[in-house]
Image (cartoon, rainbow, N blue to C red; front, top):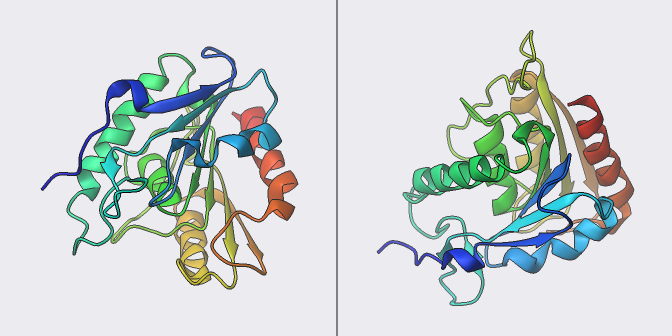
Length: 218
């Protein structure tokens, strides 16, 4: 049975101006919701930055929170449709603020979605990606990740953060992500920390700097 879809009015939350010269898009994890990462934006960007937190389309099996696709279904059959849905939503947002001035920040399942839709194959050319406690989708191979108007196959920057004691998504998942992204032509940095499945608040300055640098280099 397909995952329930949310009404359009609940599809996203916003902070800051709808139209700006830069945007941060937040993608929450499995079982969370659009507001999960929204307060984090206050620590990462200035008030004149457009911030959009997207709500995943599916209802989590527990009945609480949302999911981009059902992790409990063998082979993740909902994944292709979820990626296409996210791609379209981001392209629609790109009519307000260009994707080349947009940074994606995702956590866990949201991180996997952000990386796949931007770096996988014919990915969207965003300014940069921050993937926290993420993992690669099966058979995922990053493309070149060219910036708009770029040349030479130099991809946009990607920052990975991951707890070295993560019991939900192993730290090794981000090690593999770093290897794949580097091979795909992306500048990638992996920041590990002594903790579990979370975003380490001690890394907030580094994440903020990575986001700012991505806009400066775009």
